[in-house]
Every structure is written in C-alpha cells, then in structure tokens.
Image 1: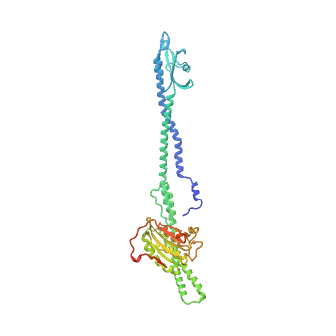
Image 2: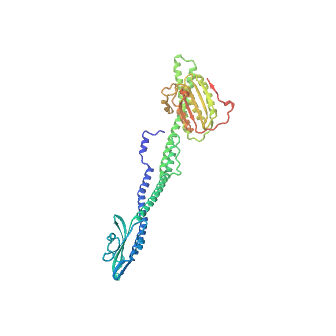
Image 3: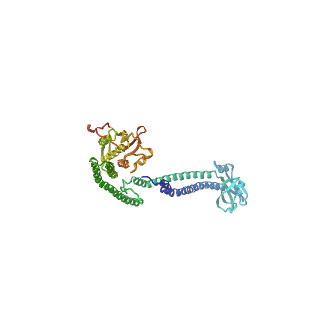
Length: 483
C-alpha cells in the first residue's frame, strides 16, 4: 500500500517519543553530573587540606615550645639545625616568624611577622595571604610568655601552597573521572532502558505493518505494554470492522460474478448456435459481435471470481504441495488448440519444481498468463512456458517475442482494468491483476520484463521456497513445442 504524498515528510516532523524520553533523562543528568563532581571535590578536598593544616599547626606549636624567658626577657631558643628540621619540606617553601609581646621580632622572617594579627593566649587561626608575591598558608598561634606567663607572644609558620594545589588537582581529576564514568554508565543505562521500553512498540509496529486488506487478523495483545493496550484494542476493533466490510465486498463480488455466469454461459451458447445455424447474411456481423461480447463478459465474470478467490486464499491455511512441472504441462496442453488457431508457436521448457500453495489458483495464474500471451503476442509469434528451481526458489515464467509493452506502461499493468497504451485485442485488463494477487497469496514475487534480446514480453513469478518433486510418470512429461 503506497503512502499518501507528503506522508514521509510529515512523519519526519512528528515528535519522537524516544527523543523526548532521552531528553527528560539526559538533561537532568547533564546538571547532576557537574553538581556531583563539585560535591565530591568539596568533600574529598576538605580532609586533605585539614591534614596539611594540622601538620602546619604542629610545626607552629613546636616553634612555640622553643620560647624561653630569662630575667624577664623573652627569646627563641632555636638552633640552625632545629630551624632546618622545622622548615624543611620537599614540596613547599616554609617560613616562620616569632614576636614578643612588644612586637619585637624574636626570629624568622620580618615580612611574615608583619602579617601577624593580634592574638590572645592559646588562640590559633589560619590565614591565606601572599609573601613575596606568592600565595601562602599561615598558621598563627598566641602563646603565653614573659614573667608569670601573662604576656602573649605570636608565632607564625607559613608555607607555599604547592601541596594544597596538588591535592586539589588530584581530587578534581579523580572526581571528574568518577563523574564522567558515572555519566557514561547512566547514559548507557538510559539508552538501554529507552530502547528496551520502546521495543514492544517497535514489535507492535512491525506486527501492524503486516496487516493489509487480505490480512485483517487482530493484533495479538500478548506482551503489549499496558500503556498501549487501549490503542491495540481500538485497532483490533477497527480491523474487525474492516474484515467484516472486506468480507461483505468479496461476498458481493463472488455472488455477482456467480450469478452472471449462468446467463452469460447461456448467451454464449445461444450466440454460438445462432452462428452455426442458417441466418440472413446481414445479421452475420451482429451475431459475431454479440458472441464476442458474450465471451468477454463470461471471461470477465470468471476473472472477478478468480480475484475474489485470490483474496480469500491469502488468509487460507489449507495450502498443499503443488508440482509446478505437472501443472504447467496440464495447463499447457489445454492451450495448445487455441495457440494453433491463433497461429502461435507454444513451447515448453519445464524442469522439476514444487511449491506449497493452492493448485486451482496457480492454474488460474497460468491460464491468465497464457491467455495474455496469445491475446497480445500476435500471429506468427512464439510463446514459451518455463518453470524450474534456482537457488532454492521455484519459479515460472511465460515469455513471448511479440511487440512487447513499453517500460513506462508496465507498472500500471498490475492494476485492475489497466492495459498497455499500445495494447490490441479484447482483454479486460484484469489478467495481470489476478496474477499479482495470486502471487501475493503464495508469498511470491511477480515481475514484468522484456523478453530475450530486448524483444517481446516476459512475466516471471519467483516463489519464496520450493521443493524438488518426485519424478513424474511418462504421461506427465512436458511437451517440447506445439505449432
């Protein structure tokens, strides 16, 4: 069934459920991952910085323990060896400063001492500042000193921030990798979840796609998601109404054709008898035209019955094994006489081939192909009926070397009541439509081609599967030629 014009472009403009689900899943994820990474950085960085601050504070306390008071004078009992031990660090530069209660520098870096805030006894704090143009971290401690320990000395220990920057960088890299891994896992799970969730809809779409005017069976609701169940039930009710309407149409077509067959057969017989009996010469042309019209009408009624049978067969399940070679031989023998009368050489090239199908429909298919060939090939032409098996598929074809059909006309020949623009004869344009419907009912593919050497016309039917039949008795062996 062909889609209406613009259906494809309209489909591309429709909202995508898959896209909408992914957006609702991935957009929050895009905001969550950076937030999660920032939270992990904050949580993991704090312990590392606290550990470095505790180490810096321990050094500050060690310097405070070196404060001594002698005769009321405060000093810092610090040797060079001790100073090196307390300020040596493989990663950062460490500096210290000590001031007495009067602000006098007891030791260390004067520039660092100038950064000292006023502190109470035992008060500790950390400061971020700059020294010599470089960022530093300062640990400041107020320590009791002097006579009676009532005055407060200030101890400052500062170090550069290389270890802190390295710790933050390591935490940031680790958190980023974890966040990206988590994001990749969540995106993958989201894609899998959406695909898995929509899989029943895709299966349902494929199942609905199989439905046609000859296959209006209800869609199986097993495995259908709850959200789509109401849609499937509504669709099944629609298919039921279509099936009833299609059945009524087929029944009307079959009944009408059947009712026409008897009066048309009587009319054919009467006109044929009238032509054989003596009659006035002036009535001869009228009687011949009347007889020809009766034959066309009778054939049309027969073809309408064949169409109805082909449509019903698409739903039938009582197919059986049909020997194509024997069938072609049987039908070909019937058409030997008409071929001789039409001055046409009817030949056969038959090989072993068998299909699963309905022999009466396949006989009708062959009858229409041979009738078309004899009708349009023209006197003196050759018509060849072939069948065989190739690559596991059975096939049959009828080819003639007549005038053929222009390629531009071939596509519409499959439609009912359509003939080629250069067609002669008295055909109704139903023959190939019947061939198409019967081929479809058997799961076969029908094609229209030019004959050998680009001359004539060939109709080829290729079935989906085949089986080589047993050897035929001598009486059923194919005829080679008839003319």
